[in-house]
Image (cartoon, rainbow, N blue to C red; front, side, top):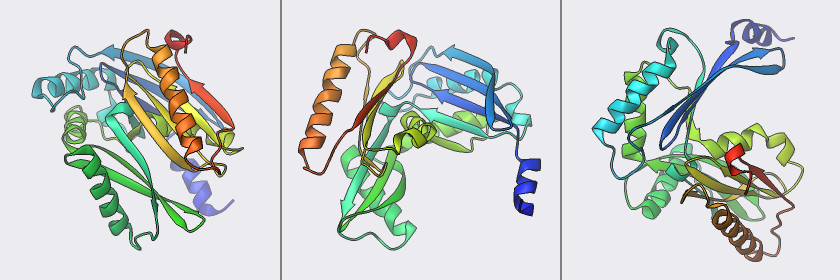
Length: 260
């Protein structure tokens, strides 16, 4: 093997942390790599007394979040470990822009993404973007954003708990990447349901995200409403262009949502 691969194998951390910051709970999972396998060593979950992502960030809610993160994080502040944090899909906005021409630089692409998503959100947002290539003569640009105030508040709570995250992303992005090799076999849809929110992600035959939607949940018995919204969104997406298809629908749920 190349020397850089040998170095990476020697120094890359064998342990990692998955952190979920939900609207009303915080979850943490510790994993260990054993060859090509990943083993779960521990799982913790704590319910928050004050809901997050409602209105403007509340100092008391952020202080409570920091306290919970400190408790579940334990020794994370003193160890060099990859920590990847996921946020509720409904707290994140995703959109795919079809453009006649793609801005040449990353800075210009980022600025276009920020401007477009900020217009939709009606307020300041923190953004990220990724070029998805071309569909015929149209350039595809994926944009992801969240409220700038809440992103700053979450980062402040993590910092106060001594936790340095390597990435901060929507939960559905994690799931799509996790099962990407299964999805690239054709077009499809992913319905992801958490206790806080649900999301729908649609991709084309080349496994490029083309449509995304997320909503906060209306209650524990909202499965029929979610299914109806998913159906309407898929039908509208496919009818919007005769080239669009959804060959398979995948659902990712917990035991409490088997009824979906």
